[in-house]
Image (spheres, rainbow, N blue to C red):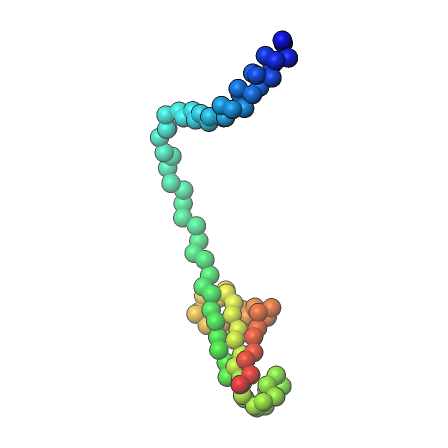
Length: 92
């Protein structure tokens, strides 16, 4: 008999499912805002036409696409700012 009561009790608990209850307290007052962070760097992309003298371009024409962050903030993508891992060439 005990076994039947335990099995029925477990069956009843499983059949009822689980109900989530959320307890929320009263919101406190907001703190003061922190200081602003520094501005981020601009991303720049350059497109450079390649001539037939370039060692990269055998066909005599094409473009080099390079990108990077403007570290010195002069709005020009300098050679040292180029991300050489993402240098692309399109030969036409």
